[in-house]
Amino acid sequence: MDGELEHLGDRELERLAYGRAVTRAEQARAAAAGEELARRARPPSPDAPLDPRADPMRAIEADRPWWRRPIAVAGAGILVGLIAAGSVVASVVTAQNAPPAAFALFDREPTAEERELRPVMQAGGHLAPLGPRILDEIEYGTVVAWLPRPAGTLRQTEYDGINTREGPPQVCLGVIEPDPVARTLVSSDVDCTEVADFAEGGVSLTLRGQGGEYGVTWSPEGAVDLEVAISEAQRDAMEPGFRRAFLPGALGPVPYPQDTAALLYDEAGYVDASIRLVTSMSDVDPNAASDELLIAFLGRGVGAIGDETACLAVVDDQRMRELACTDENSLSAGSALALDVTRGIRVFIVTWTSDGDISLRGTTSR
Image (cartoon, rainbow, N blue to C red):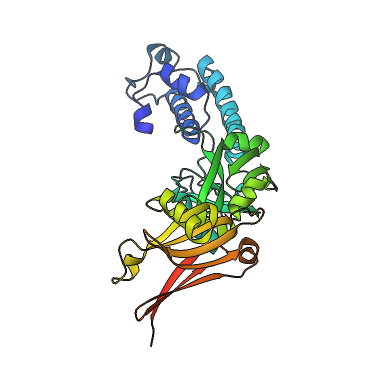
């Protein structure tokens, strides 16, 4: 840096030495410029050659002590002030860039649960170079925090802080919930705020998930307050029980729903049936006819009101081959519904549990 400053004129050096310096690099450059000005102000020895870099007016005043020259006197005073002011500015910048106390949770190692949440966030399109860290868990949701771009480890010596050319860094909060259909965790909602704003007053926001609205307050000191509001419809969606088999995406539709509905009415007297396809029997038994379908349905008998009946059945184009039913209260209470299907020496046991799992197990009869 010194070699670079030697080629600058006095005015340029004065601009650097006495101008505003905020960053550490700017402060160091200002101090170096002041030193170069002081060096140029020192009188040369009587037998030393004239410094070609010195300004002509400075050569005229070479016989004056450097501390009595007008520019040097002003420069010395400003330089002393600059050094003192630089220390103050450095302390202000350091305090400004210090991470909020709440960010101490990023300094610790992630827990096993937090490591498991990382791929969930990535699957939702949220990269978390630092995080996630769990703030709190309530009802169906886990509220997490992370930094969306690298910021060191947030320790004082590595934190890139607020004053960065890449723009203010952000801190993000999100809610992770279970998907009742896919039986996996999903990132439901995300909201981000600038670190500068967080450092001043924390965040107070609402994350909207499948399982409710999560009101989150997180202070710069680290205090977390979390409340959730859940509607009855949201609670039913998150706790569907045996009806999970009828949520979108759980099971497929039957090929000819109107014909199947008519068959259920004719064969068993069920109306207003919600029908789902479990599997084609030919997919599990090579000897089964191609039109044999294993189905699950919810319906009511003709003239019946109130609770629905849950049924498993095997049907083909013309008839109902096997049928097993139970009322919804029994299935909700934990009593699984089972259907036995015998085809030659093969026996298939179909089970519909209270939490919505429908499984098929095949054995060979003796």
